[in-house]
Image 1: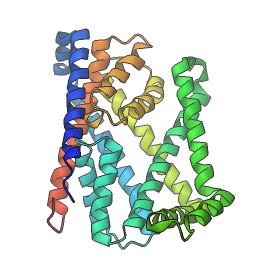
Image 2: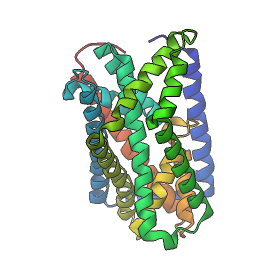
Image 3: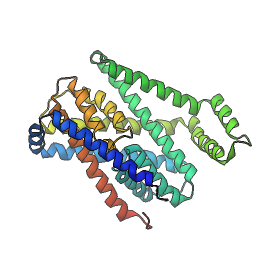
Image 4: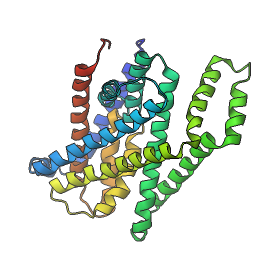
Amino acid sequence: MKYNPGDFFSIIFRAALSVILLSLLFNLVDKDAILSAILKADKLYLIAAFLMLILNYGLCLLRWYILLKEFHLGVSFKKAFSAFCAGIFASLFIPSFVGIDLARGTDLSIHTKKPRQVLATILLDRLSGYAGIVILLTLVCLFTYRIIIDKTILSFLVTAYILLGLMIFVIFNKSVYLKLTGYLRNHKAGKMRESVSNIYEDIHMFRGKALLLTKILALSVLSQLILPLVFYLAALSLGLKISIVYFFIFVPLIGAIALIPLTLSGLGLRDVSTIFFFGKIGIPGAMAFSVSLLNFSFVVAAGILGGLLYVATVSYRRV
């Protein structure tokens, strides 16, 4: 890949912003309380939380591998696993979903020589993951609507429904599909637009595959169920007794905010949003910050493990 000086400065900027946000937070909360809480954390709960995060990655890998098989790319599970591990490692330096998608997409595109189809699987994978978040939030709301009275939470839910509805309408609506592909196939559109049209067709072919879509969505919902449990176990390790319902409401919000590409792997944004949301139910800032830091440590550990596994499984050398 060609070196781009802008990438280096982008990483420096995000790292600097992460440091600034963390410094501000450490000045606002009780640092001794954070250190004491983390040092006294129950190790069994921490191990369980980390294993749950690994399980979540495993479900995401399985979901993507099913899509790769559907496109008949001839990718073995070992090769998909290797590319996915590269993505987990890259997410430590690039905003998480961008890092994972860029690394795994680049790796498999070089391997298969079919970048268009690989990109289509990644786009479908992301769409199903987002749909899983909306489905989970819907189920939580149906059973816990009495406690969801905060305007911030309600506005997020409405926005999530609107975005998902628009994406599904554009991608799977036949009339929209025909109009868009007809425009993109115009002889004046050029090769770039033709490529976009081909990717759109690859994605649109899943419209009639109800069984496959159901399987993908089921894996997405299971994956989204696990992430709140990771936070919940981290909170239990610190001795916090919080209803698990709040984790299923707050964690998707925190994850969405952490994906904003302003800091290094969401560090800083994740912590601010964790303190904000859990502060709504009376959790002290120091304890909420401790939960966030523990979860980030799980992500770092998983990223390092992913990098090591990638090096151990890759069958050809490149940076």
